[in-house]
Image (cartoon, rainbow, N blue to C red):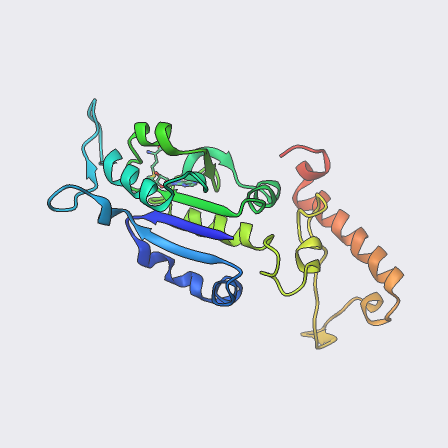
Length: 225
Ligand code: SAM
């Protein structure tokens, strides 16, 4: 999958070079680049924002640098162009799976009071939010999308099974996990997990998964979001 992020702060994305996503980038499963919107500003001081028409607090990211940046990165509209926005569709397991079906994804990160609406109307296919709260910029939200979506790209996780057993994959929360030692601070690993009986283990996990979901996220069981 090819991912391009358009941002005023490309260095924020350096942390993607770590762990699972970092390995996927190094191995070529993900082709990732953060593109500096400022480089496309026609202003002599490379300014990318201005005061809002109609008044009000803060600054708005101007249309021109973003428009030129998008068209330089994606001249033939081969990318799914996403604007990170608190007004967008809320990210979920299902949306991550859907987005992972695209070969090319472009994520536009706003800052300040947001982005001139005209460039969104002209260039953007979809708006995605990571939750009902306001961040100071779209960069952290874009990183959440990149991580959540990349897990469904073939070869990014060690084994395909690793995301099929996770919370939300079957509409429920995952069962509790344990590792060695068998006893820690007086707390024992449930006996059933030590006996090697796969049928009993599967049934124990299914039961725990249901109990946890009922207690922590009853909305998932009733089919609500
Ligand atoms: N004035 C905007 C509003 O009230 O809807 C919020 C602007 S916010 C301070 C700056 C940028 O952060 C936005 O343009 C967007 O790119 C990003 N952002 C903020 N909250 C977000 C969220 N929940 N999900 C995704 N992106 C978000």
